[in-house]
Length: 177
Image (cartoon, rainbow, N blue to C red; front, side):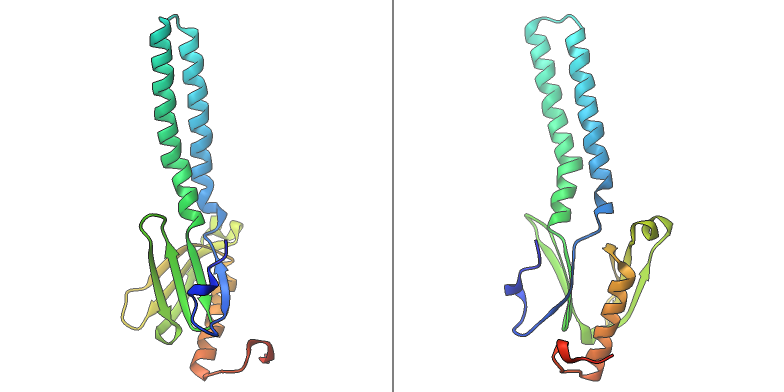
């Protein structure tokens, strides 16, 4: 789902609208697979041991509830967190929003941005992702992890900063290189 347009200022245009890279979900997917395998093994083991019907049912239900809670905690929660995280660059500001029940966010006006950096290691380069580091006028640098195509986002943000410094008010479609 894209960032809601009704949360933008009048005439504000989105330049980048991104979620964290899908690489951030690898741990959640592996947790779900391991959890499902453990549930299967637990139920197979309970079925292979000769218990009274009530004990077998109780152990099976308890294992199922514990597995559902753990899978929800380690697999579903990261997916929900990922799907509700937005990294947006407009022609006026950088917006970061995350959260479901407790939302948090930060807006950085482009006029306050001092430096923009990116960092990505070998694995990040293979997945074409990385960390974008933005230093504003008075705050410590902010790091945004798992930004897809971080080099392209870095370049776009840098160009928007140059346009902000130049006072470029031309409509986006009429800019020349």
